[in-house]
Image 1 (cartoon, rainbow, N blue to C red):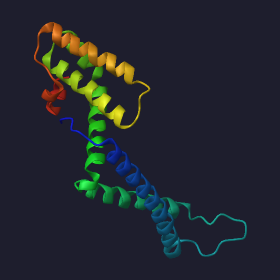
Image 2 (cartoon, rainbow, N blue to C red):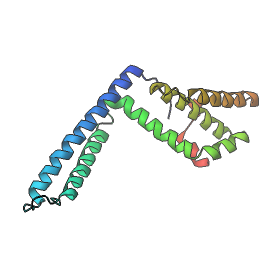
Image 3 (cartoon, rainbow, N blue to C red):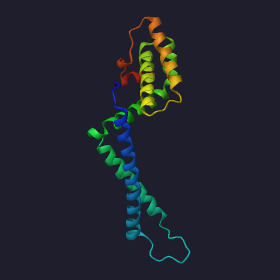
Image 4 (cartoon, one colour):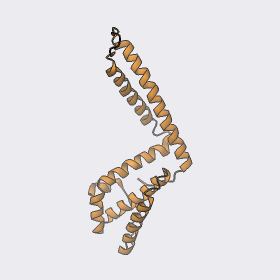
Length: 174
């Protein structure tokens, strides 16, 4: 996966709209489906002041609504409107995969393993990229210092390594 240029304002606008529509659709569908399920399968005789016993139908309505909303969102992932949002979500998932192997990758990088250095270079560059997109500047200084340390290690060793050399398959080595 390569880092691509993303217009921050377009990304934020699209992300906010996607989240808003997803949450609104989920809420409306949950209530609608819950009511439909209760109408067709719910208890009709309820004593005054007693529970209706339809909680399971409401929960089922929410689960079906989640499946419908998530499926719809997933089916639209190739649409031009979702391009940036889907790309960043995939990038965050890849960062998560790298993070789970980070200890092993750092150990290999200390031994000047080229794949580990490429992976770390990509990891820190992608973290900085996503942090800037999401306005998450709280830990940006730490990411910058870690990224600089990796770049210095690469430069001291005289290696020709860049984050653009990263391939997802490299993670199988760690």
